[in-house]
Structures are given as C-alpha cells and as structure tokens.
Image (tube, rainbow, N blue to C red; front, side):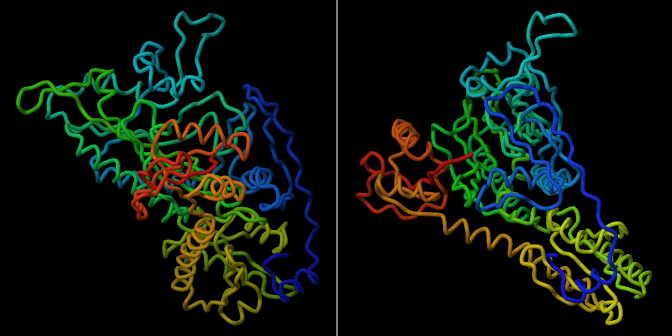
Length: 529
C-alpha cells in the first residue's frame, strides 16, 4: 500500500485483517435537462482508473466523485456538493466575508426570479446571457401569462431597487453583497465546478458618487480574489484587464484573475471584478442629488467568484492517487490512523490516537482519527489519500513505545517521525510547508508553460504545445475576432485571457503578432475553459 513501511507491511500480513467488501457501484442516475453532448459520470471503487497525464477529462470526473466532492444528480449539469467540497466553500467564505465587511459592504438577499420586463431593460447586458436564461413557464397545469426568468446574474434583479433607495449624496456609497445560487442553462459539456447549470457564488453590487471610488474598489476586490487563489487554494494567478471583446456585457471594463491548467494547456477565468461605469445607472435611472443640488448618475461595480474555484484547485493539485488539498482549505488537515500489530497494546494505540487528535484540535488544527475496525490501515491510507488530506499520522506499537508518531505528507509522500513533546509545533510547520510547497510547485509548472512570442507562426506553434502565450497586441477587437476564427480550425479557438497589470517593457517599433500593426500592450492568449 502507498505510504506504508516494512513494519506496517509485516503487521498487515500477520494480522490478516478481514477481507474488505467491494464497494457496490451505485446506479447512474437517468439525467434530463438537455445538453448537446452526453455527460460522462465516473462511479468506481477505491482507486482511479485514469491517469491525469493520459486522460485528463476522465481523470477529473473520477477524482471529484471518488474524492467525495460531488455526486451526480438526475438533471444534466447539476451536481450535489458533498460536505467535503462544501467545507472548502465555507472556509473561503469565512475569509472573504469579513474582508468585505471591513470595506463596509453589507450582505443581503434578493429573489431568485426576475421579470421579463426588467430583463428587457438592459438589452446589451442580457444578450450576453440570453441563451443561458432558464424560464418558468407553467404553474401546475396552467401556463403562466408572463414567463418568469431565473437569474443568471443579478444586475437586473437588484438595480431597480438601487434606483429607489438612492436619492441623495448621503445615500452613497451603497455597497451590497449576496451569497446565492444562479442558473445558466444552455451549454454543452457540463463539468463539475467548472461549468454547471446551477452554481454557488457571491456577487457584490456597489454604487458610488465618483469613478475614482469605483476604480479603487475594483482593484481592492480583485486583490481579495488573488488571495483566495494564491494564499488559500495555492493556485498561482495573473491579475489583469479583459479585452473589449471579453469584458462583461454592458460594463465599462472588466478585471480578472486568470489561472492556467498545464495538463490541458487551457486558461481559466478565476474570478472577475467589473467597473460597470454609468450604463446601468442610465438604464435603471439610478440618479441622486449631489452636494451642489444637481442631478447626477452613480458609478457602479459588480464582482463575483464562484464554486469554480474548487474545480480549479482540483485540476491544479490533484494527482493519480486523487485529490491533493492545501491545508488552509482542508476540512481535515490531519488524519490520525491507528496501526495495531499482533498482540500489541491495541487499546493503548487507540488511546494515543485520541489523545493526539485532541492535542491538535486544542491547537487549532483540524484533525480526526479513523478508528474503523473493518478496514485495514493500508486501505485507510489509500482512502484518505484519495480525499486529499494534507497530512497523515500513523501510530503503531513502535511509535507508542518511542513516544512518537509518524507523519506522512500527501503532497510529497515524505515520512517524518515526530516526538510527542514536539508534536503541535512540528505539525504546524509541516502544514505551512505543504501549503507553500503546493503553491511553489504549481507556479513552477505554470511558469514553464508561459511562452513569449512575436509572430503568427510562433503563436500557432505555442498553441499546439499547450502554452500560455504572452504576445504583443494592437488591442483591436477585429484582430481578436480574426485570431479566434483563424485558430478555430487549426488548433482550437484561441482568445485573449487578459492583459496583465504587470506589463513587460514594450520596445518602440514592436508590432502586433497577428496584424503587424503597432503593438499597444502585452496580452496573454490561449485556449480556455
């Protein structure tokens, strides 16, 4: 078994633990709800049948089910978030919510339903979502006279009431956030966490008297999103600005954090922070009387991150044994496993496991003991590796006699013997090291995929090699459309991911890789989810 030493192997052989029953395969639910391609569902026993490097899509489908992150539902594109993944969402929420409260942003909740009349008010905005809007058309056996939409996002839900609540300059800024679900229906190839018909997110909607205030908040929120990815999920991201073609429909400009999946050579938008400008204020008549007694329009922002964050983390860190969870977001940071042997002091071993868990819990470390007597230690090792627990502690007769434990890292498989007197201090150090190592390894892999190019031929070659491409660009929408069209047949459609805030030097005379026109900026390009 992975992660065992000779002593443990001898113990298992001598003790001849009861043969484990095979886990029954659950029937695949019949799915409804449309979609162009059939969804692939993986229902296997312990262990993965696909390799990450060989069949990434199948591997991902397996690992999120076997790692107990999700279960498939009987409606295509909808998933049950099991406690193992929901705990990760709650940990991120516990970080983000107090941070936005420091910014005097308050939580609220608006209804799930939105009228067609309101949707039609902002046509430029809703056109971007129109194919994905789900509609309620019946009540019992009766057709509704006016269909009701289910929110794909909440600008049109909330802003009629901003118009009502904002009257004078003293009503500003108005800064609200809601934690909710949204529904986006029409697409093919649903993927758990990454692309689902219903998902959880937070969405912030704020209104200010000045553009300067709005601009400042856009970047403050984006920095919080960076911290979620890099400090909690240990996933490196690039902060940057979206192109005019890729920005939020109806907004002034969009900023984002962009991650990259080396195995697939695809970028993935991690979270977005939009400055909406005054477009929505015009549509919904969000006006106020300023300090001079004059009528003025507000400046607005909206920003959101979703459960997609969890999928990105799985894709970046997972391996052929299953999930690999960063300690900061793992609901169980340390799993303690008793390793009884022959006629050893079994009760003493179990008591030591309980004492170890209690010591760690008192120190603020999320720890549990696996005392199930119908599974062998080796089977437990494999299961907790599948679930991605950052650190495993084994306690056997030798450990009991030496007043120590054996710690095994999930990220590297390294084994470390730790004396009981140093346990808390050393475990904290190990968890910190695992967190940092996961980020460092992920960043090294991501950076190795970044390629700077200057010509179209270099661009196509880099796409074929699954690169995250940094290229000089003329910043013209028609050129971006042309790049997308030209690559669609050759390599799979490529687009801008973002123009990084941290811009390399652009020497005078540099030309756009795609058009030959004078380049205005460096932008990241690639295939994307």
